[in-house]
Image (cartoon, rainbow, N blue to C red):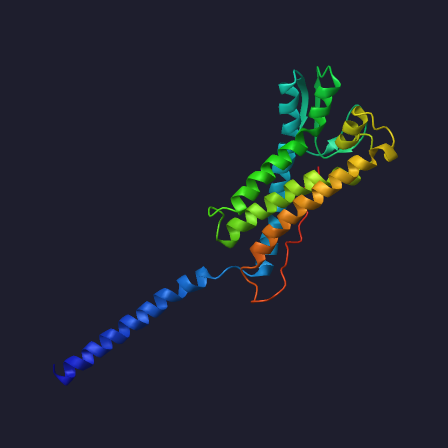
Length: 227
């Protein structure tokens, strides 16, 4: 091969190498996980649609429970407002009729808690499986949703209003005073702590994508739902 031919071949190889480097650079950048700040900002942006979805799930659970025990739904309002009968401000409202037994009323009031536990169980099964997203944004969406489910489950543990679902449920069970309700609240608190730990693991896994080796885990500062 002549010197001129070798020079042309070398130039061609150099051009190919440069093109490969340029082409590979965007892919390498795209493969890098988003920063923690970006994850927090996007997570906050997900708060409102997640709240809306959570309210529909919460109030919809009341509706499904009522229909299953023979009740009829009169009002389904998955947005904030005052109850026209009691005047209490509520972030959602479901009013039914036809709940003729204490058992039916109990399951009507507790239905959202059952939904929270079932969906968190599904999230946990996915989290522990190979099908859990490896990408940061997929994990972020699931983590925000799981956080919202946990907030909906745990928030009534320290609620004392007579309009609260948990308070009504405990009253149906004959727990009329706060001293009588204390054991039930402790059970709810323990369950909330256990579920909270599982959700924290999801936060830790999400932010571990950007952690330096040996760095302490971080969590997403979101309490996205309150019903």
